[in-house]
Length: 199
Image 1 (spheres, rainbow, N blue to C red):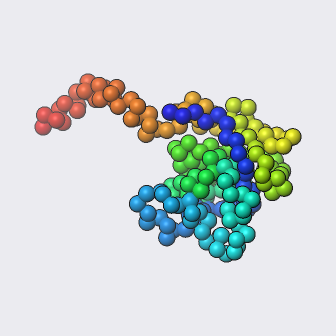
Image 2 (cartoon, one colour):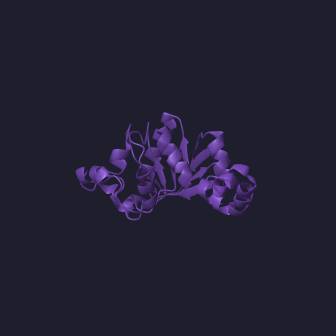
Image 3 (cartoon, one colour):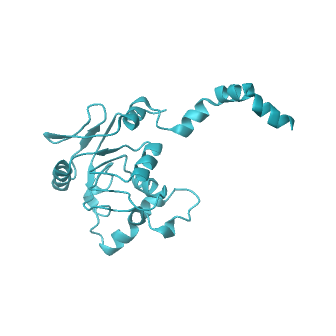
Protein backbone atom coordinates (compact mmCIF):
# COMPACT_ATOMS: atom_id res chain seq x y z
CA UNK A 1 0.00 0.00 0.00
CA UNK A 2 1.24 3.49 -0.74
CA UNK A 3 0.89 6.29 1.75
CA UNK A 4 -0.28 9.70 0.56
CA UNK A 5 0.96 12.38 2.92
CA UNK A 6 1.72 15.26 0.57
CA UNK A 7 1.02 16.15 -3.03
CA UNK A 8 3.36 18.73 -4.52
CA UNK A 9 2.86 20.29 -7.92
CA UNK A 10 1.47 23.05 -10.05
CA UNK A 11 -2.25 23.66 -9.86
CA UNK A 12 -5.27 24.27 -12.08
CA UNK A 13 -7.97 26.71 -10.92
CA UNK A 14 -11.39 25.57 -12.18
CA UNK A 15 -13.94 28.18 -11.15
CA UNK A 16 -17.64 27.30 -10.87
CA UNK A 17 -20.14 25.63 -8.57
CA UNK A 18 -22.06 22.38 -9.14
CA UNK A 19 -19.78 21.00 -11.86
CA UNK A 20 -21.32 17.57 -12.32
CA UNK A 21 -19.96 14.26 -13.54
CA UNK A 22 -21.74 14.64 -16.91
CA UNK A 23 -19.59 17.70 -17.54
CA UNK A 24 -16.45 16.04 -16.20
CA UNK A 25 -16.82 13.10 -18.61
CA UNK A 26 -19.77 13.12 -21.06
CA UNK A 27 -21.88 9.96 -21.28
CA UNK A 28 -20.67 9.00 -24.77
CA UNK A 29 -17.25 8.16 -23.31
CA UNK A 30 -18.64 5.65 -20.78
CA UNK A 31 -18.60 2.78 -23.28
CA UNK A 32 -14.87 2.26 -22.86
CA UNK A 33 -13.67 -1.15 -21.70
CA UNK A 34 -10.84 0.34 -19.61
CA UNK A 35 -10.25 3.83 -18.25
CA UNK A 36 -7.21 4.30 -20.52
CA UNK A 37 -7.56 7.33 -22.76
CA UNK A 38 -10.24 9.01 -20.63
CA UNK A 39 -7.85 11.78 -19.63
CA UNK A 40 -7.92 13.20 -23.14
CA UNK A 41 -11.73 13.48 -22.96
CA UNK A 42 -12.08 15.07 -19.51
CA UNK A 43 -14.40 18.11 -19.73
CA UNK A 44 -14.73 17.38 -23.47
CA UNK A 45 -17.90 19.39 -24.08
CA UNK A 46 -16.88 22.32 -21.86
CA UNK A 47 -13.51 22.45 -23.63
CA UNK A 48 -15.16 22.44 -27.07
CA UNK A 49 -17.53 25.22 -26.09
CA UNK A 50 -14.73 27.32 -24.63
CA UNK A 51 -12.58 26.94 -27.79
CA UNK A 52 -9.24 26.43 -26.09
CA UNK A 53 -9.90 28.74 -23.14
CA UNK A 54 -10.80 25.97 -20.67
CA UNK A 55 -8.08 25.63 -18.00
CA UNK A 56 -7.42 22.03 -19.06
CA UNK A 57 -6.52 23.30 -22.54
CA UNK A 58 -4.42 26.29 -21.55
CA UNK A 59 -0.68 25.66 -21.96
CA UNK A 60 0.32 27.12 -18.59
CA UNK A 61 -1.62 24.41 -16.74
CA UNK A 62 -0.38 21.38 -18.66
CA UNK A 63 1.31 18.93 -16.31
CA UNK A 64 -0.44 20.29 -13.23
CA UNK A 65 -1.25 17.82 -10.46
CA UNK A 66 -3.58 19.82 -8.16
CA UNK A 67 -7.12 20.80 -9.14
CA UNK A 68 -8.77 23.62 -7.18
CA UNK A 69 -12.56 23.76 -7.48
CA UNK A 70 -15.54 25.39 -5.81
CA UNK A 71 -18.81 24.12 -4.28
CA UNK A 72 -20.42 20.69 -4.81
CA UNK A 73 -17.86 19.43 -7.31
CA UNK A 74 -18.62 16.00 -8.81
CA UNK A 75 -22.38 16.10 -8.23
CA UNK A 76 -24.82 14.30 -10.54
CA UNK A 77 -24.50 10.67 -11.54
CA UNK A 78 -22.18 8.35 -9.64
CA UNK A 79 -20.00 7.41 -12.61
CA UNK A 80 -16.54 6.29 -11.56
CA UNK A 81 -15.31 7.46 -14.96
CA UNK A 82 -15.35 11.09 -13.72
CA UNK A 83 -12.55 10.84 -11.15
CA UNK A 84 -10.76 8.34 -13.41
CA UNK A 85 -10.74 10.88 -16.26
CA UNK A 86 -9.41 13.60 -13.97
CA UNK A 87 -6.68 11.29 -12.67
CA UNK A 88 -5.76 10.06 -16.16
CA UNK A 89 -5.27 13.71 -17.19
CA UNK A 90 -2.70 13.93 -14.38
CA UNK A 91 -4.50 15.31 -11.33
CA UNK A 92 -3.31 13.72 -8.07
CA UNK A 93 -5.35 15.72 -5.53
CA UNK A 94 -8.27 18.14 -5.37
CA UNK A 95 -8.94 21.14 -3.15
CA UNK A 96 -12.48 22.49 -3.08
CA UNK A 97 -15.25 24.08 -1.08
CA UNK A 98 -17.21 20.79 -1.08
CA UNK A 99 -17.51 17.53 -3.00
CA UNK A 100 -20.39 15.24 -3.85
CA UNK A 101 -20.25 12.24 -1.53
CA UNK A 102 -20.02 9.49 -4.17
CA UNK A 103 -17.42 11.41 -6.17
CA UNK A 104 -15.38 11.83 -2.97
CA UNK A 105 -15.64 8.10 -2.21
CA UNK A 106 -14.56 7.15 -5.73
CA UNK A 107 -11.54 9.43 -5.42
CA UNK A 108 -10.54 7.89 -2.07
CA UNK A 109 -10.79 4.40 -3.61
CA UNK A 110 -8.28 5.54 -6.27
CA UNK A 111 -5.87 7.18 -3.85
CA UNK A 112 -6.76 10.74 -4.90
CA UNK A 113 -7.34 12.96 -1.84
CA UNK A 114 -10.14 15.56 -1.96
CA UNK A 115 -9.77 18.16 0.76
CA UNK A 116 -12.02 21.08 1.60
CA UNK A 117 -11.29 24.67 2.50
CA UNK A 118 -13.31 27.78 3.26
CA UNK A 119 -14.74 29.50 0.17
CA UNK A 120 -12.63 32.63 0.70
CA UNK A 121 -9.48 30.51 1.02
CA UNK A 122 -10.31 28.55 -2.12
CA UNK A 123 -10.74 31.82 -4.00
CA UNK A 124 -7.36 33.08 -2.75
CA UNK A 125 -5.69 29.85 -3.89
CA UNK A 126 -7.41 29.93 -7.30
CA UNK A 127 -6.35 33.54 -7.86
CA UNK A 128 -2.76 32.72 -6.82
CA UNK A 129 -2.63 29.77 -9.23
CA UNK A 130 -3.96 31.94 -12.06
CA UNK A 131 -1.27 34.53 -11.35
CA UNK A 132 1.52 31.98 -10.74
CA UNK A 133 0.80 29.00 -13.01
CA UNK A 134 4.41 27.80 -13.04
CA UNK A 135 4.81 27.84 -9.26
CA UNK A 136 4.20 24.77 -7.12
CA UNK A 137 1.87 24.32 -4.17
CA UNK A 138 2.00 21.64 -1.48
CA UNK A 139 -1.05 19.85 -0.13
CA UNK A 140 -0.02 18.47 3.26
CA UNK A 141 -2.42 15.97 4.83
CA UNK A 142 -0.37 15.67 8.00
CA UNK A 143 -0.31 19.41 8.67
CA UNK A 144 -3.81 19.91 7.18
CA UNK A 145 -2.82 22.81 4.99
CA UNK A 146 -1.99 23.88 1.46
CA UNK A 147 1.18 25.94 1.17
CA UNK A 148 1.71 28.23 -1.82
CA UNK A 149 4.13 31.09 -2.26
CA UNK A 150 4.46 32.77 1.12
CA UNK A 151 0.95 31.76 2.16
CA UNK A 152 -0.96 28.75 3.43
CA UNK A 153 -4.61 27.88 3.97
CA UNK A 154 -6.10 25.32 6.37
CA UNK A 155 -7.80 22.29 4.84
CA UNK A 156 -10.18 19.65 6.17
CA UNK A 157 -10.82 15.99 5.49
CA UNK A 158 -12.78 13.45 7.50
CA UNK A 159 -10.42 11.66 9.86
CA UNK A 160 -11.36 8.23 8.53
CA UNK A 161 -10.35 9.05 4.96
CA UNK A 162 -7.36 11.10 6.08
CA UNK A 163 -6.03 8.22 8.17
CA UNK A 164 -6.46 5.83 5.24
CA UNK A 165 -4.23 8.07 3.10
CA UNK A 166 -1.65 8.59 5.83
CA UNK A 167 -1.46 4.87 6.65
CA UNK A 168 -1.69 3.68 3.04
CA UNK A 169 -4.88 1.67 3.61
CA UNK A 170 -7.05 3.54 1.07
CA UNK A 171 -6.79 0.68 -1.48
CA UNK A 172 -9.47 -1.81 -0.39
CA UNK A 173 -8.80 -4.21 -3.30
CA UNK A 174 -5.07 -4.08 -2.67
CA UNK A 175 -5.62 -4.94 0.96
CA UNK A 176 -7.68 -7.99 -0.01
CA UNK A 177 -5.03 -9.20 -2.44
CA UNK A 178 -2.26 -8.67 0.12
CA UNK A 179 -4.19 -10.71 2.69
CA UNK A 180 -5.25 -13.48 0.29
CA UNK A 181 -3.56 -16.26 2.28
CA UNK A 182 -5.17 -15.24 5.59
CA UNK A 183 -8.56 -14.90 3.89
CA UNK A 184 -8.21 -18.44 2.50
CA UNK A 185 -7.30 -19.78 5.95
CA UNK A 186 -10.29 -18.06 7.55
CA UNK A 187 -12.61 -19.34 4.83
CA UNK A 188 -11.31 -22.86 5.45
CA UNK A 189 -12.39 -22.65 9.09
CA UNK A 190 -15.96 -21.55 8.35
CA UNK A 191 -18.27 -24.57 8.72
CA UNK A 192 -20.98 -23.26 6.41
CA UNK A 193 -18.52 -23.09 3.50
CA UNK A 194 -17.70 -26.79 3.85
CA UNK A 195 -21.45 -27.59 4.03
CA UNK A 196 -22.02 -25.76 0.78
CA UNK A 197 -19.12 -27.64 -0.89
CA UNK A 198 -20.47 -30.99 0.35
CA UNK A 199 -23.88 -30.39 -1.20
